[in-house]
Length: 424
Image (cartoon, rainbow, N blue to C red):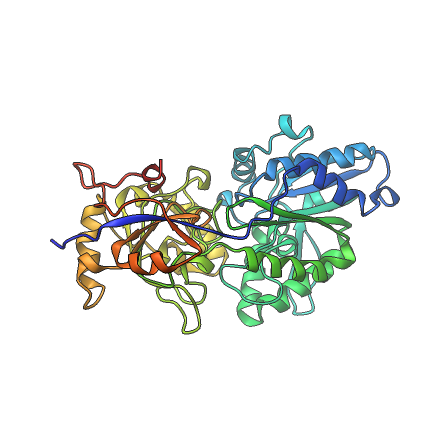
């Protein structure tokens, strides 16, 4: 049995732009587009709601609904999330309602369906699918968070254009687009499909959201259809600038309390843990470099979807028991990432996991291991770190040491508490 490293808590300082009046900013941004020129009283407006746990998303969606009500239009909400929720309308509606996006709160109907319309053939020779109910509306508003994608790199990654592609393409579209990306590239396919959707599916506006490193709303931008690509490039630059990061560039072990689709498309943000390009190791140019990842649980909001758990080497058995296998497989296979659903080696307690993982980190003695421990990849403002980082932390002006060095707090069963509890 190895000696365990002792831990201490650090607090990071990130840049912190923040929108404090969410409804007011949404209203102001949409007003700048003068949508009354194209949206007439009585017209139906479909508003997208995705599967990510975006800060204040229910307030953003309600404010969009209110704006179009003010124009005399009849807005409704459509879940737009590809194959998530098990690829069912009921599952997708359940996901958005879990974020507070309900008919009662937003004041308009939610219309969930997995049916699509094939609007045309893309230049690359595949069918372009679009949510049938949204296609039947007079106008469509695309709302989503702009941030670095977990698997693709470019000047357009995860955002409004991807929402038109994967989200509004539903399960049928997501399957074919991910196949096409294998033969071409994400950048080419997202532009190809977005071009067709913008010309044929009555997109009236986009609402892009960017978050800061504290999982807060940093910017809201209303976008006219002809400006989608240009504005999204600009928002992605900001998103990358404000993306949270781990406090240190290397680690032998990373403990993550929870993963889930509300946190990231791969359950944990690969941009944060350094596994965007390869499943179990950082690419040569990629940081941080984490040798071993241990998953301790799933978020309730993910409804058993453990997509991305296959990127970890170890897990607690409770995390594995919480997996909805069919939902996870459906999502990973649709995305063309079968390994994301693979089951890591798992044990009942944290002590057992550390007993097997610490001896295989290399020549470093277990007591001297570089270990970081986080709640999830959206919440890294405070991180528990092993004593091996203490000297560096003392020299860093961007880090504040907020606890003494102390032993890992195992209970009688060898299980650690949630990391957030240690900071209370």
